[in-house]
Image (cartoon, rainbow over all chains, first blue to last red; front, top):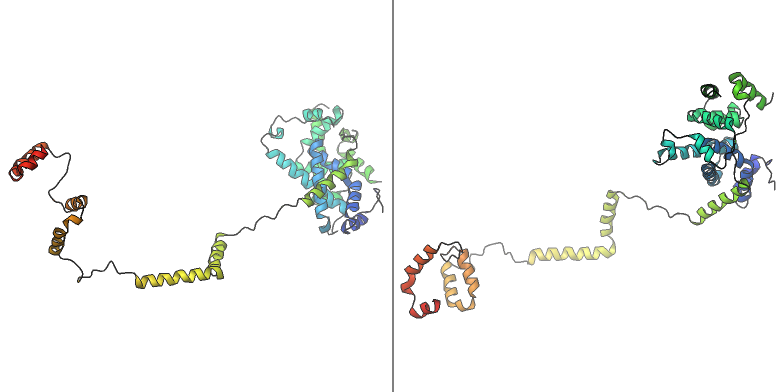
Length: 187
Length: 171
């Protein structure tokens, strides 16, 4: 049985759908995609503890629903879609909590990252994170998927269910905003 | 041109500043985090499977509840009781004396009633007789606010009718 990251999506689905191989199939799926999905989620929710919760919830949802996966889209597209939705749901819940610092206008990503023991970036990386955090939700997702995950517009289109043209425009706007942020901050 | 090069070229055209920036994010994870993640997820999935929550009771509308109650009355165990109760009600209607209707043949005249009272006066207690007297508006009127001059006047009127022994008792 293949257990490396080279295992194909079809092989993973076959394992998952056979009653006596479900766990093996799920472990193979996690081995192949857990890091990519974790980093995708982490870029959205920023803190490790939050990313850990959202990643686990994402894979629990995948496990529960894998047998209903129709194969109409690629497996990784389906996984990214679930992860993105989970992260957005988490962020929306966090914003609604009255005690959360995200409701405060003085919420400072710099302090959050500096206090996070799982962030050891330099000043430039920290400023880039701050610039990205100022983007609207959709532009932020497009920028992350294109800039960090280096996905094609077609793949992003399948994940976010948005036209390629609209995605290109979003990415261009996002890059320009980040550049303007750097200029305004004399970076 | 591979995808990485293509994306870098696009980025360079939009922002050379960003294209030259190192993509290292600065995020880290705990040691062996990814090695143990699958076990943690599978453990949660298995725990949820064992402790499957009980299904929520079906929401029943008030109309359904009413209909169910009515139908339950016709169940065998209730039907016997229901029939017995109906039978008792019918029998009660026919057998219960018509107390509200006036039977002129049985009615007493005032004279007959007074005669009966006079003959059997000892059988009635004093309080009952007093009560009847008050209800009928007799002159016997026990009002604490009755002025004293009227009491004296009344006593003067009847003083001759009271015999000496009774007067002694009162005084």
